[in-house]
Image (cartoon, rainbow, N blue to C red; front, side):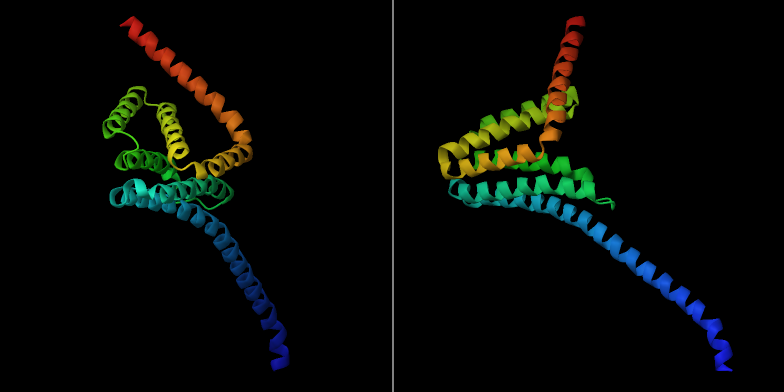
Length: 212
């Protein structure tokens, strides 16, 4: 009796077994892909933590924390250079991808605020620069305008490091060169587009003011 039933049940068991193995393989693949997206999100959260730590150091230690702030900011920007490629290579969508640019703006302005808290820059200057950036950004309503003000903050930050922590300037410049080389294709595409957008925006606003 068992000899007659065995051929009938074995194919069905094999089908179920193959189906289970296929599901497990798909689950492992999906987990691996989604793990990449999770890492990208974790790097974004890390950048937010870096910004909070810099503010705390500015409040508690001020100028004495410059070395730590330089290291933290460098780690934050390294994470920014990593989360984008990870997110683009993951078929699984990230949860915090929409917040990537706002986090970049936050970290940039936190460095700027720290410079005021530590006494490297005048609080009045930092407040005025921030108000000017906000005004022009709202007036033009373009990301390129805010990026222009962010690059100004980057230049001021490098100047502060050059004056007060020159030991770290060479590693920072070396890292910037490596970053520019790694993202050279994107830079060749985006930088001319950024300049063109700024030129068009200012030309458009000038024409509007002339007509009025």
